[in-house]
Image 1 (cartoon, rainbow, N blue to C red):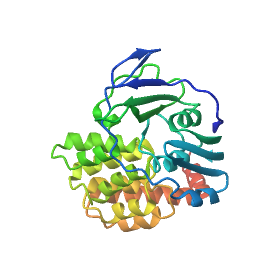
Image 2 (image 1 turned 30 degrees about the vertical axis):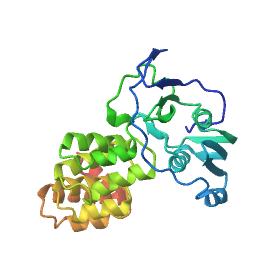
Image 3 (image 1 turned 45 degrees about the vertical axis):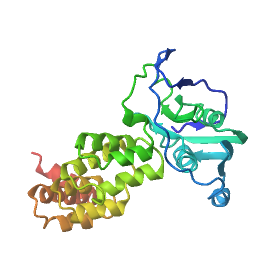
Length: 299
């Protein structure tokens, strides 16, 4: 059952550069300054306005939006592209199917976010960086009622996407892996693209790391382009990645063609999985014949 959201008042926890405990929430340390450059105000607004039931823009730190029964995930992704505030989705938060409706006119960004996210537990972090005044840096989003035992988190969880991108070239694989995990929790297209680049092997050459990234992305339900999975299943040098990509495409129309091609894969594990997929497809295509054969074999 999908949830439908409308704008109403919402309570949030606010932290300003120190740990506090209130109502069961424990908040984090001072946030590193957000380094990403926001999309200039108004860019893409005409395109947004043309979409039925959706318009959102941020100018000078103030939010204007007209949203009618729109997918929450798409709304957050568009908003992320226009602001420097980092939005972080909790690992156990599934917004697939969630819809949002709101009418906001020139309201402060933090107020607008609170009203858009009124059906979730949220944690707003305000921090000071350099000589700039305290401002909103990060918003954590949790399932309703799930954040009452919120604990302190490592720096990767509240770092900006630019800071995480810098961590992706660190020599230490543990630091890179934590950065990839943090990127996968964010709705922005920029964060997602960094993960996809790693899966393509463009920015990450460690085979075991790429396997862990793909495994985590699949288990999180991250949207992976079918053409990317197809390329990984056909051509990737890693046996583990070819196997996972083939599995991830089960149910896709292209999987039969891929499974046939995989019968010639140099890996026995991939060849065996391809045979299983083809057998499953054949059984699904001839359910009556399979049932008759089973009944005839019984004494």
